[in-house]
Length: 100
Image (cartoon, rainbow, N blue to C red; front, side, top):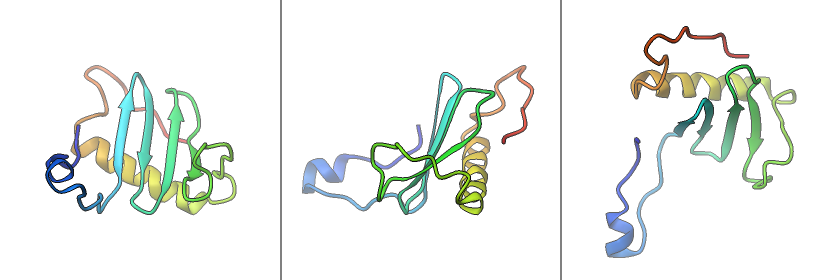
C-alpha cells in the first residue's frame, strides 16, 4: 500500500499529511480520498461511483455524484492514475470495464 511513514507521529506526535490523494481497492470495492477531503467509492465492479464531501458529511450519507459531475470525473481520473501506478488494475486475466 502506498502511503506515508508513521515514524514521525511516533517520534514527534505529528507529521505532514498527504499532498495528493490516496486510493484503495479491496475485494473489488474501490475508493479514492483526495487531499482536499472529497472521497469517491465504487462498491462493486458494476456499481456506479459515489461522491462524498467528507468536510461536511463524514458519515457518507449524501452521495453528491449527480450534483458535482466535474469533481467526480476529476477523482475518477485520479483513482485510475493511482491504480495504474500501483498496478492495481487490471488484474491478470481481467478485462478492464468502463467506469461510470
